[in-house]
Amino acid sequence: MAFSRVLNINELLKAKSHFLFGPRGTGKSTLIKQNPTKDFMVIDLLESQTRIRLLQHPEDLESLIDEQVQPRKQKTNAVVIDEIQKVPELLDEVHRLIEKNQTRFLLTGSSARKLKRSAANLLGGRARIANLFPLTFSEIPDFNLLRYLTFGGLPAIYTSDDPYDDLMAYVNSYLNEEVEQEAQVRNLGKFARFLKCAALSNSQQINYASIASDAMVSESTVRSHYMILKDTLMGDLLEPWKESKKRKAVQTPKFYFFDTGVTNAIVGKRSLTPQTVDFGQAFESFIYMELKAALDYKRAHLPLTYWRSVSHQEVDFLIGDTVAIEIKAKERATMRDTVGIQALREEKIFKKFFLISLDPQPRHENGISFLHWRDFLTKLWEGTVF
Image (tube, rainbow, N blue to C red):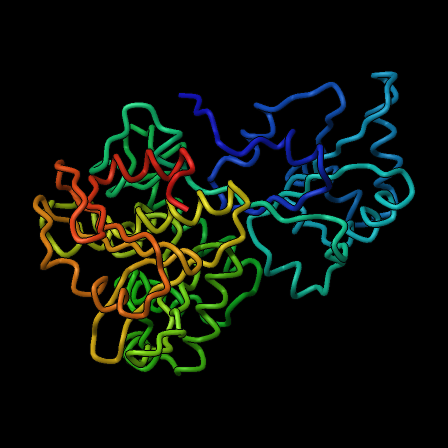
């Protein structure tokens, strides 16, 4: 099945060169193939002969581009270098060619960690950053919520006849290729234990001491391992909103994995049952990723945070200082579910309040919009939420 993605790389390149980051399997290479233009060429660093040549002689980049352009007898204004982290030394040449020829580059990668570790030239503002996420609600015809929460939104896995086995292969590949081969950690077994503990606490406030105890590693190791997850795009921190005046806010971030299917596979979960804690956590993670993708694809440049007071009032997601969103994976939502929102409203800062649930009956009550998740996501992708 071919999916129509929200992100349009031709539109990106009209403006400027870009880094395009995304976890492995999100479809970066497919997206490139689906967006051909006459001025568009690809250098694939997964192709061993090309990679070895450029590892040995990064300065060959310009001649390699010329070799591909000459047979077509036309100038190329857009060059894709797929998996740029494989040869980070190329970025000096990219920098030079942007300055010399005004060539537009799309530099794709599934990890920013190797670029950071190698002190690579990140082009000093000459390239913007775009991100590719797993498939979103707006990109999947006949969207199946339970299938998505269970197996996630990686394109090849969402359409797979055996998604669980494919997810297990994905996790093993991540450990072996992204972690072990890149020498990210000294002990892969300890990292695997940490990875399971982190997945079990997905969407929750990070308790470094508890995870360190469960994974049998030091607290400092847990902190560094979370940075590996972040740098390899396996997930991200959701920072707390700390500006509340009426109630003291917690200072600890949450961590969300980038895909519900991958999270389930890490902990060996083959199925989800509605009206369970596991289903609720997956549902919250799903809405988080939709919000994150929409903010990024629409170039909104608004912070996504959460709020929790030390006395345990909480609102799941805040967009900028305007929108507050509470998530409840239940069939009937009531005002009793809005305790956190009501507490936050006392700050008199946020303007829009949503309670998102499985309740099919939309309504507006006491300044709060109660919406079914489909209705909310439709509004989100139409651009009327923030």
